[in-house]
Length: 160
Image 1 (cartoon, rainbow, N blue to C red):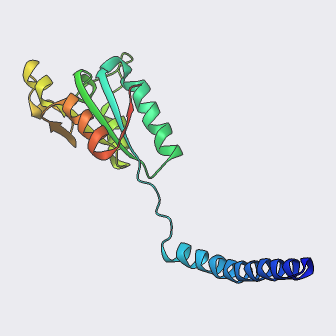
Image 2 (image 1 turned 180 degrees about the vertical axis):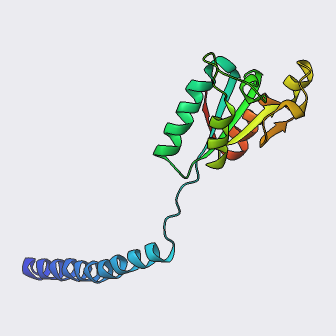
């Protein structure tokens, strides 16, 4: 075998391999769009758990809720109140300027925001469920609810 024979065999082998690769690339490229079309990307479900334990922060939190809803209308927003944070969710509660919280809460509820109150706080402070605004849900423990939302539902934790 001469040097020319080795070179030609080597070239033929290399050309053959390149040709095989060239044939398989279009097949791979054609398969990718089909796979993408078969399973369209699902929008990501987003949940945010707002923690409030001080009613004086309620107005700021309500503004944050509004801004959050405006930026991401599909996000699930849950407010969890305990300790002093439940005060703004009581019937007749007003801010320091004498404005009722109820209409603002109602606006957020109508948009899908959920408000949850800690039963431990209600018991400790001797607040009856009847004193809460309509549509406010009572959960056994505010801290446990925040933990559940974060661990089980992947909620982002927000404390305004």
